[in-house]
Image 1 (cartoon, rainbow, N blue to C red):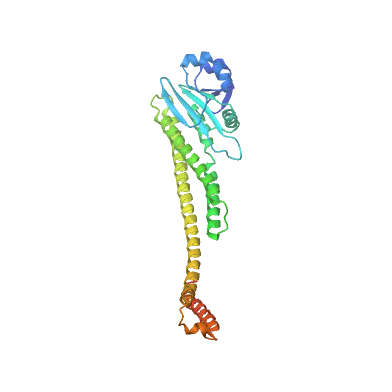
Image 2: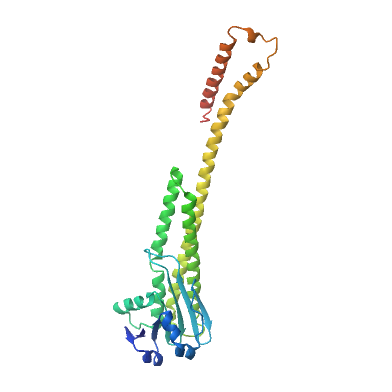
Length: 303
């Protein structure tokens, strides 16, 4: 499909118009692009467009080549990926997901600002990829906050599994926004002057927004690490409580162990052995020791 960006509208055009005029956009899928040998040879567009897994912009003689890959599905949609060429007065998109066509149709149906340009269209396409991502990051933050609350209450199961999934998602987002920031800065550099100064300045807004999302993602990463530290602290506190109980029990029965060892020696001249009340007396002494130890520990607030 071919489009021309007029002053206040985006309209479909034919292939000849795309080849002959400026401020035009072409959208192909991978199969269609492989058949466009004439167009590829004319501008020497020879980059591989397969296996797109990151966002970048490369400089070449006479054009810029870019790839975009959105790794995190929003609203349970599959990931998006496309490539594009920026030539003087033209942009070529190769996209199998209909992301670009849907975006251009949306732009065409809305009221377009005056002096709408090719640069502004590319900006709108890119900014739409990160438009609602701040809300998505807020949902991740709320999920981490819930996990932290459950950790403090001691009611969370499978903490490591849940936190690992969140950390993996945050890591993907951080790389994605870092790449989008670099992409915006590369376009903003405009060394080959593919864009007019009035138009390409909008990419400063895109770059700043991607950079802020990158910073927000870094904050989420640090928050997740803090929650993990809280979890480790809670595990340590529980282990300390168990050890405290074991220590108290050991301390209470240590005197009884001494008594058992003392009277277990079985010397011949031990008057308690033949004493009629020796056995009840040992029971009484043992009971007094246990009760006294319990009262002492309670007074010292050891529990």
